[in-house]
Amino acid sequence: MTKTARFHNLFDRFFRDKQGKLIIGQSPNAPIWGWGIFTILAIVVGSGKFHDGFQLLAQAFLFVWAYLELRQGDSLFRKVLGTVIFIGIVVSFFK
Image 1 (tube, rainbow, N blue to C red):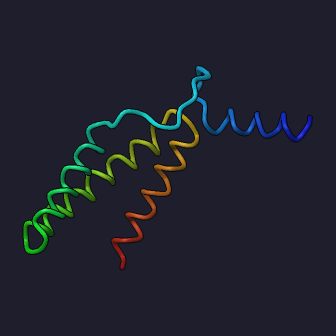
Image 2: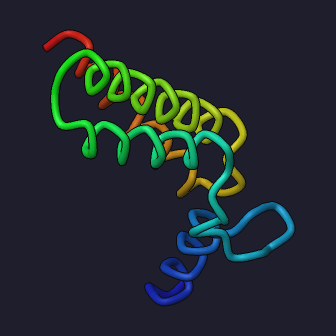
Image 3: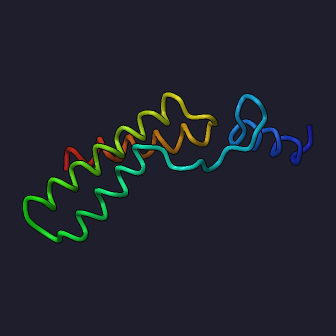
């Protein structure tokens, strides 16, 4: 097998789903919408209890999104992305 063939095989396994469709990005789902909305609200509020609450809610939505990608991602890329975000969130709990 040539280097080019191995690269294409790796690319296909990493970025394609079981039906062979290229899956890198998908339209945002509910957890990503929640994360975005609460992140924007936290920025708008600036500081205080509402800011802290909005940040926690945003992080919770991102945690749910990462978990869903880890468990149900359509491609290996999506699963790896979910895993990296999931680990980052868990590690941030202990800082």
